[in-house]
Length: 530
Image (cartoon, rainbow, N blue to C red; front, top):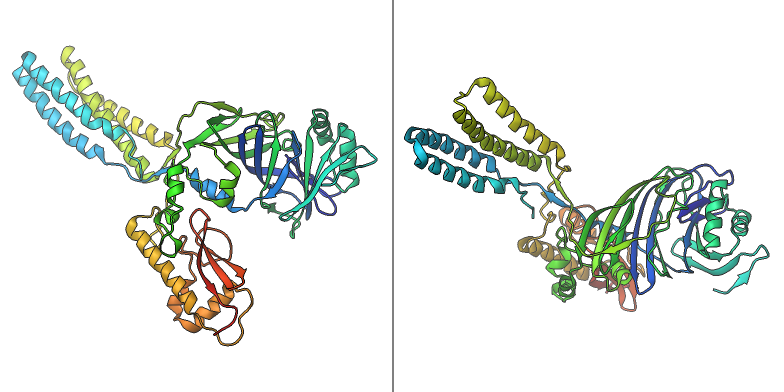
């Protein structure tokens, strides 16, 4: 995939080159979705690029001419939620129980020594076995919950279309030099390093989808909305060679959907889940105000429910989703990547809060101490040795070292538990009832709003805020204009907890979006006051 900067407006899937003078740009991050079934691949790419200039071109090399469609930015927001790792922020304090058992063990040890003989040691062994069985759970983590035309230079234009904010054109030619000339003559500043890559793709019969883009700022990081490319291919492919041109490093998040688990050279499988069709079907039921508890409950870690409208249309009947992560250097982007399909194996990434990691490390340290003391004691008994402060300090040091090593090895993340009345990390029934009540209030207030004089033909969020200001108190208005899922001010966009306004013959429909960005109609506002 590449970005090309050009004097008018251009953007390329693979590599960015600067305007006129080919100032070097980089592609620091890239997120993509890949779905493959029955010889058809759907590739959705969201690319972030850094460079100077206001006009760019996004050029994507593909094995066949694609169908290009716009994809909402919320698609990858929803994928992040679906594939988020498990956050473990609570651990059972087994170490306290183990210390108590240790005291009991020491007392028993002394009694066994006094009795002597086989009976005492059998009693001691039984107690030790019981202690190990009780202590082991502490070592196991607790889980939280186109017309066709031929250019004189030999480049065929397969399609032209406007897709979202992009103007796109699909090109093909068996002559890579001709393609490079076409790009340069149409304002793309193609660096010399890209020409051999373009020529090789052209020789293999690949096509190039180029999309034009302008941005208001001449510098900084830009993340335009994703584009989806649907095309025929014998095997799934993730193009990388054009991305690697003059790019030393690229962090890629790739979500692959298919009938089994996907693996890719140079990428790590971070998450892999089976799709939860039952949850998706159950979530389609109609409830009060069109809201069901499932639509406001964040998916649990490892729960792959596909309710986002854009995602459902893209992945069709896929049964398995795999999230792959790769930090690619120039060598890693010197060739395209072809996913391989292997038997399904569930994989869930887990991260600990610092508190949970500390508790788990203490559990391990105390367990090591308790298990080591009797072993050393038995060795001393057999060798007629004695406990010394130095020996005990060595055993204690080993236990502390084991705990510290465990703490250092555990993947940790900062955990913030939100305490807002309407915002929770997970939605329980009582919390849902609060949210549903607030949505019901909002819907009723929307219907009750009366504004003197003429209303705008299509309502907007500021209009709604002004109407509430006339009808309700300041505190209630503040609550009405708050996103019930995030606790932030309402925004007019198709994102979780926010509103959109849609013109209809009866007036303006007010659409509320649930946690998966599925829209629900709260009500219809009249175009004029009664």
